[in-house]
Image 1 (tube, rainbow, N blue to C red):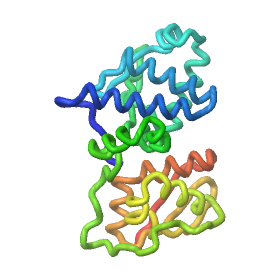
Image 2: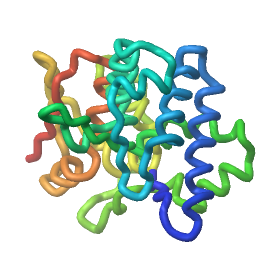
Image 3: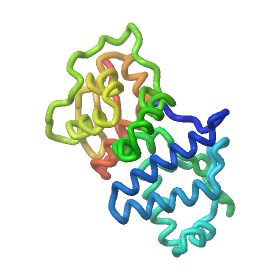
Image 4: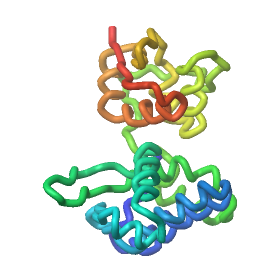
Length: 230
């Protein structure tokens, strides 16, 4: 998944496309999901700085915008961070408000199943703009391609994670996640083995976030993930 950067000559159109993806995702979900996404969209349209990727707004101001109490704000913002849609860029200190950012890659990955509801023209446009594809470089000659890229049904956390990762991006899955082997899962730490040091280093550098997010969504008790190399 290549991130669509809402900057440049077509910035306005790209922003509308991202908001459209959020809208379609919300409408395809239940009332709770719809309310949460609507609240996020309210923050984006009123206070988010697209160019700097910054959202800076206190809980009291958010509560007023959402017409809720601050306890609800704290709960929903924590959920958006747990989903990976919001991330803390600068932690607030001495009475200052934290600066948050949007993880557009994560948002586009999660909303992609609802894109066809908008129309084939939208799906094609997102593909042209990079909404489908790979945000990270493709494997070079050091990586041997694996023929079998569709995950088989396997028990355990890693087996379920494989299915989720394949559904999100089959190309990235086949190149980088399929070769991984589960070594151990103990005390909230999942250990995976990569086929080479290069492979392990690449995953730690570029794709660790995807692995950790997939694991924590399936098992909130997961504390961390390790990748070992030969």
